Image (cartoon, rainbow, N blue to C red; front, side, top):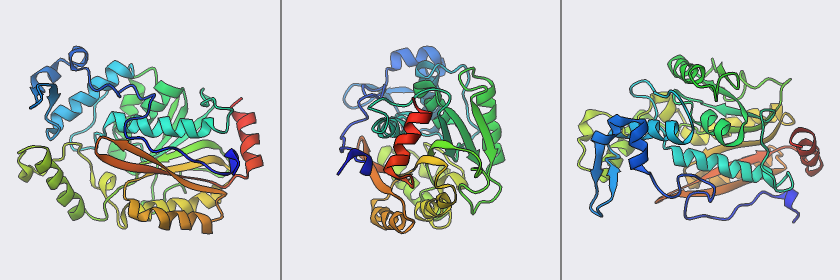
Length: 321
């Protein structure tokens, strides 16, 4: 089968080879950017310096230090209780996406401000636009239903030259829509990315959170906190990620020729075959998954396009050359 007929990636047991966080966290350097992180450093049973990953403040300050040190930001923070995603895992997503597009660009990852990425659920943290700008110089449109999240992301954008003028925000006013309302039929995106709400209910999210915290440490899980935070719309929706991606697939058919590749994170593998079947029924020319592994956690990116092999070549030649 020809390269343009199928998208494939090998399983990796580590972070992506190009991920700058593969060697671990350099805490000695990071505390120079966020001095308050120093007081939250601990020594684990192996004698290594780390943080208590069940402590929301420690996780937030670590993320802030990484973004200031490695992504050259001047300012970054998020409102209390909002999602504070692990930076290395988010960078992995974009590295694999870049590799995927490089397969259709003579092995060269497409770069530059002309390349447009749509981030569904940009969040208060604005993490994907930050990484996309820093690593690939892409222009990004971020959408969200939460006005507080959008205001937070807007403040991050306005206070960082890396982002200002290159990241646009749009509000999704209908919680039942994914692309509709933020992806116009008269515009084009080279890629769409998304990290959908995983859980089907708040109760399911809280149960998993409490179990995770218990495993991380003896942290008091009665405090109704989460080490990575997260508002309701960030963590769960009715139907969870299965509904979200299914709806995204359905809506993508209305802009089928306006995007080179649609993608989304997919955490639960049990939905993989069902969603790939939906893509086949939607007449996607390509539907596949890219596996990723960070530590003990395994996830995947589900990817699809409606462009024919010929249209894929024309797209790369006209937009990525």
